[in-house]
Image 1 (cartoon, protein in one colour):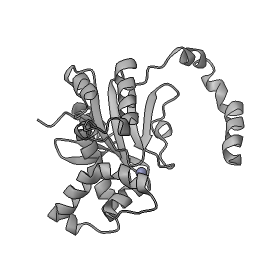
Image 2 (spheres, rainbow, N blue to C red):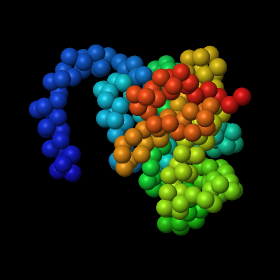
Image 3 (tube, rainbow, N blue to C red):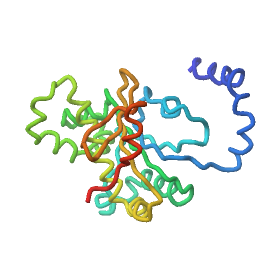
Image 4 (cartoon, protein in one colour):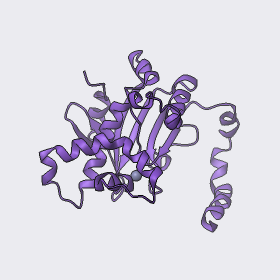
Length: 229
Ligand SMILES: [Zn+2]
C-alpha cells in the first residue's frame, strides 16, 4: 500500500502540473473516444499502453473481459449481469461513445480456469461468472486443430477465441445493435501479449489477430471490424 500512496504524492509533484490546464474542463464532463472492456488483471494498463490521458478512455473491467450474451441475460437473469449492461447503456446513450474495444490478454487467469473446465467449490461466484464464456470452451475443445496446440500456450489461444466470442455477444445486446446499425458505433477486438506488451487487432477478413504497428496500421484502419453477415 505504501507504493500506492507514495505514487499519489509523486504524481502530485511531477505530473499533476502537466494536466493542470485540462482538469477544469474534465470536471465539466467527459467525452471519451472509446469504451474498453478489459480484464481486471493488474498487468494491463489501458491508458499507459495507448499513451492517452484522463477523459480519453471509458473502461469496464471484469474477470476475463466477458460480455454475457443478451439472450441469456434476458432469461430472468437481467439483474445478475446488470453491471455490464449499465456500463454499455451509459457509454452509448449518455456519452455517445463511438468505439468499443474488447481487449483480452495473454496469461489470463480466467482463461486458464476456463480451459481447465473444472468447478472449484471454493470459488462459486468466480465459477458462475466464467461459465458465461462456456461457449468459448466448447468451440475450442471440439475443434480438431486445438489438439495440435502446445498445452503450455493453449490458454492464450482460448483467450483470443474468447475475444471473438465476446465481440459476437456484444452484438446481441440491443443498445449496441441499434448504435451499430445507425453507424454511430464500431466494435473492435484486441489482444495484449503481456510478455512483450504488443497489442494485436482482430482482422475479420483474415480471421486472425494482426500486431498493431506502423506497418499494419493502415490495413487495420481500412478494415474495421464489422458484424458477421
Ligand atoms: Zn485476465
